[in-house]
Amino acid sequence: MSSNTIISIRFFDDLVVRAVWNEENAKWWFSVLDIVAVFTNQNDYTKTRNYWKYLKAKLKKENAKWLVPLPS
Image 1: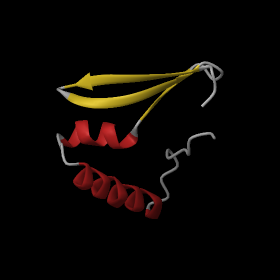
Image 2 (image 1 turned 30 degrees about the horizontal axis):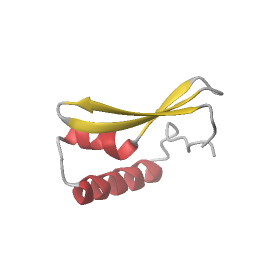
Image 3 (image 1 turned 135 degrees about the horizontal axis):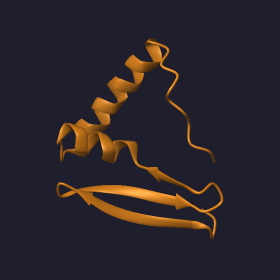
Image 4 (image 1 turned 60 degrees about the vertical axis):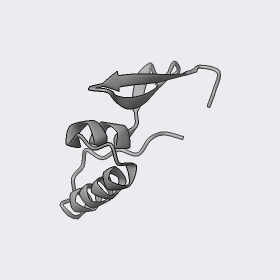
């Protein structure tokens, strides 16, 4: 991480949502697993990870174009 990066912990309905601000790109990046946990109201990391793995595979199979890898 560069010196232009700010790490933030946010809470939504008592669930943690990790975020990173990248000054260079002027964008917030959020943890996909944390967002999935909020949407599914799931506190179990393993279940959240498995749900995201299933959903990502399904979206790839359907050729969903909105999945964008994070820049390095």
